[in-house]
Length: 300
Image (cartoon, rainbow, N blue to C red; front, side):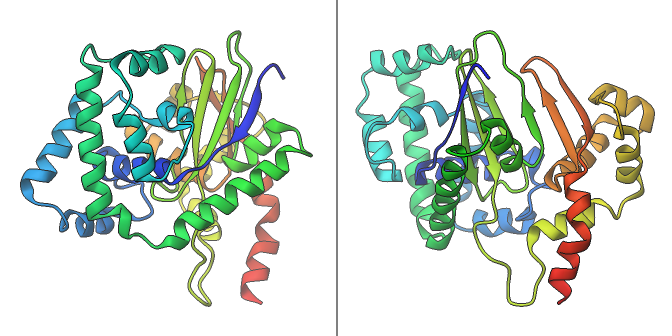
């Protein structure tokens, strides 16, 4: 392996993730928190504030704060990070962007100011009031994954954390940064740069209610309860297929197949083989092998 893997977490990551999950309407149906969470959060903002956030999201759809959060040398609480971020000179903003080979706005300082204003408002009206156990759980998860890295193959840790993603070395890739998130569950998102990859993976930071099944068990049983998803798994048994090949063989729309693959990925039932330039899928038997024991443990 020609690159390193590290696990990182700070409250600012989750603040940005929660805002992105709220604003990105295309994924609302896939979120475990669902549209009910979106509607509840909307009540905390005025119509003008919501419009401002949506316009910002559309105008700057490719902008991500993740490299800046990772690069922040000090306190990465929401206030701590934003105070540092606001204090960067235009040259320092471009220097960080250039380090990751990012395409940036010609008015990066103005983009920074608007981003900071929206995040401060988001923190005041929503994020600052979330259950503290969410951030504590995410922090513990990051510590646990770091401990795994010291004694296990790094890519095995990456695959377990992401429920089946395999990222193969590229010519320039030097570092992968794994970041646990809660608000965007069950999605796994990856930002690719010249030498860096940031992968944000879903983690159930809060325990289930007493007597209720764990979310991971629900994802698995729900994924297996659909005829189309079972057919996709059969297609992937013993071979790798691209998204286009799956769409062609199943005979459904791309958006429908995309939805089914999200469900299968979140259940850990498929391996996602990624080179950064191409992606293919194969069957991951680990989750199926554990199913009888997991159901028995819950029923007992």
